[in-house]
Length: 265
Image (tube, rainbow, N blue to C red; front, side, top):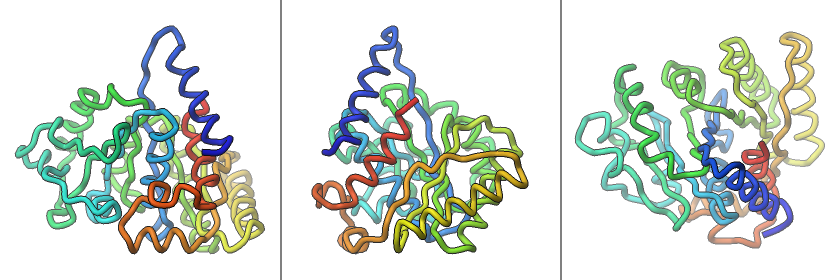
């Protein structure tokens, strides 16, 4: 691990020593459209946090097209769908990836409409298992929808994932505008992912910042500018955690930097 990951460990240690109090952090990865690499980042950031000393719960909260079970090559015995259908208890949803990383998976074969009352029930029951973790990361479905709104009411942080393309930057602006207008009171940041070059990522972030400043009088921090890299494609094709399969990958420092942002407060 590099200096960024060491910083994650130190920050977590300081937090845990604060008056002996344990407060679980809830963070949502969101995007204005699909294909931004949001799920890849949520999964690998969760892993980076876990190896750096945090106990992490990752929730596949894409109720229409969940894919974390595919990306991690897992065949869950119980999924979020089972909970909504009252065929599994909350505790049964936990699937161990590493000693300090667990996941609640979705079920792509049973993507169905979930009622508001069912989602409320899930969030009311979630603390019974979530309180044993330092951070809970939600990988949400792309776009703006009711299930996202319900989830964000329980979050402290939101990470908007975008790509450098102008259409993706515009989608990120729409998402940021929604977060601010709905007044979720979230600590909001943006990640520009799949950057062909650092300048492309910086330009995309500057364009987003200018639009938010001009039209919304708001600002979002850039949590990370993450380059395109062949290791990412290979890990997706192999259905393996990149940072677990290739801990020396150049992508480590970028994802560790993103992980550090989630625990800096």
